[in-house]
Amino acid sequence: MGRSASGRWDLGLDDMNFPTTVKIVEVGPRDGLQNESMVVSTEDKVRFINMLTATGLSVVEVTSFVSPKWVPQLADAAEVFRQIDLREGVRYPVLTPNSRGLERALESGAKEVAFFTAASETFNKKNLNMSVRESLAEIREMAATGKSKGLWMRGYVSTAFYCPYQGRVAPDKIRPIVEELLDFGIDEISIGDTIGWATPGEVTELTEALRDTLPLEKWAYHFHDTRGTALANVLMAMSHGIHIFDSSAGGLGGCPFAPGAAGNLATEDFVYMLNGMGIATGVDMDKLVDASRFIGSKLGRALLGKYLGSHRQ
Ligand code: HMG
Ligand code: MG
Image 1 (cartoon, rainbow, N blue to C red):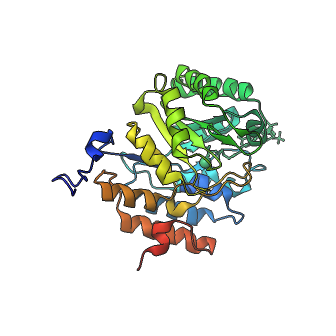
Image 2 (image 1 turned 135 degrees about the vertical axis):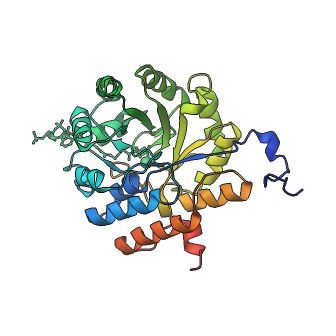
């Protein structure tokens, strides 16, 4: 037992197919702030995003061009996007639910976009006011525009494990949606445990169901941490070679249309675990803690991330 020269534990980790590098997609400014009852000022959102990109994170999801009636917290999406510092080599995806959203994103100068649909009909209707089929038709149209403009495109499949309205979602529901998204030319697909109920066995089951469809370089998982299983789920997914994961600073997050969903996996907790395992992320932990503390102070509450809560000044 002990560590190898590379810093990796030699207790079987090298035999477990774990990646040597993980790409973190930071979703705090979007998944996090969409779910806060308090509206954070544009200036503070911009500062938070700039602090996050200064940590070395290579992808930061900035905001959503959704209906301001549905998500008033992100009504300033265009101003936020225009005001942030765009760093070389960092991707800044924005969510767009429909062609109107994509138009607004393009007008603001976005070069990376994220579309979203779900494996559960009821959730999709509550979240997008569309059936799954209707949302895929919308995505097909947006993806065609995106391709013609050279955008980098992400696609989310929400409620891939559990739906807050319909319960357990069978793994074979996900594959046809993923196939369609790949067919539309989507560059990366994030499989979402929207309400944070998944457990590692279910992650293996779904991963096996998608293995022949979704190439590893396009495959992300998005775990919410409602019941404390997100890190265990990530570990299981990494043992299958998956190396792109979404997480949020301080464990912010949730979806206003998914009752009971708590925050995403906290980025600090994730980076802490990966550092300990000798898996590279390129993220500066101290700067990350500063960014989370900053947004926590603006929200007027302690964030839920475990590392953050136990970290001394
Ligand atoms: P709708 O009410 O059916 O919209 O909402 P509509 O098409 O009937 O249009 C109604 C009005 O809204 C029109 O204006 C449109 O122009 C306007 P009016 O003629 O009345 O003046 N409108 C818009 N305005 C600005 N931007 C737009 C837009 N679209 C229409 N994009 C809609 C349909 C899709 C707009 C709505 O349902 C919506 O915005 N939903 C987004 C909900 C959301 O943001 N959910 C959270 C993100 S998803 C998530 O968190 C899950 C994820 O994290 C992964 C996981 O955890 O699994 C990604
Ligand atoms: Mg989410």
